[in-house]
Amino acid sequence: MKSVGIIGGGVIGLCTAYFLQKEGHEVTLIDQSAMDFGASYVNAGYVSPSHIIPLAAPGVVKQGLRWMFNTSSPLYIKPRLEKSFMDWAWAFQKSCSHGNVERSVKAIKDITLLSSRLFSEIKASEGFTFQLENKGLLMLCKTEAMLEKEMKLVKTASEEGLEARTLSLSETEKIEPNVAMDIVGATFYQCDWHTTPQEFMTELKHYLQLKNVQFLRNERVLDILTQGNEITALRTDERTVRADEFVLAAGSWSHLLSKKLGIKIPLQAGKGYRINS
Ligand SMILES: Cc1cc2nc3c(=O)[nH]c(=O)nc-3n(C[C@H](O)[C@H](O)[C@H](O)COP(=O)(O)OP(=O)(O)OC[C@H]3O[C@@H](n4cnc5c(N)ncnc54)[C@H](O)[C@@H]3O)c2cc1C
Image (cartoon, rainbow, N blue to C red):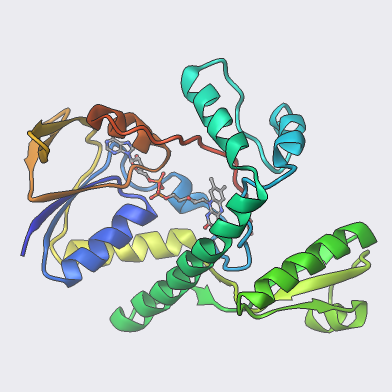
């Protein structure tokens, strides 16, 4: 049994705490917020093996430059004249290659399939009641050009063993009979899942507290203390937290802390979507 300090109480921090406590480790989780808001609470809840093409793909830089200056575009990353942004933009454009897409497809597929398996495992093992469904994803295409592009994606996904297919108009209408659709066709990914993040996060926090995971809320990690090559403790604005092992799960803030260890992570926060009902 080891003691583990986790920086960040978003979905990654909580799930890490879940699996560590299950293995018998003593977990302390530190978050600078009250742990009731943020990306992990407000996201769209999609677990999407269908999204196997990385964002860094050929053509994205040209498109992205146009999108970047429009806050209502699907990919909005606030452009800034800062070194960290410039470094990220340089690394991103270098990754927009066919080689990178080919290398990434398998890794993204493995991670997202593992993620959907682990969500199901968590739900089944502890009697959680959060929503988790395998209804799949419908991509609706308004133009032939878009349908053709999506069909290529279906081909790639199918070759990777994912349940993906192209639908005719009438097949699409059968799936959503009550929606009037102005489309030429659609693609369907049965492999995709969705959950309700607020429910998932609330239940997981409650469960972890019952399992004696210690939460240090509203406490900010300011520094990472080292001795030689070992991390020995975290210094927060309230105390020093010692542990055998540490996990950095600080989301889009992670690069700020990793810098203290001389580790450069090119990372920028981007825009996301959610559905309010
Ligand atoms: C609107 C929206 C929709 C999205 N939709 C989807 C989707 O459908 N599917 C999907 O897979 N992804 C989606 N995403 C992305 C997804 O939400 C994020 O990738 C995910 O929540 C990141 O989780 P995380 O735990 O890494 O980071 P976060 O949830 O950001 O958690 C990091 C935590 O670290 C804490 N922290 C940071 N620095 C410190 C410090 N120094 N000391 C202490 N604590 C610190 C922060 O307070 C924060 O609570 C969406 C994102 C948004 C915003």
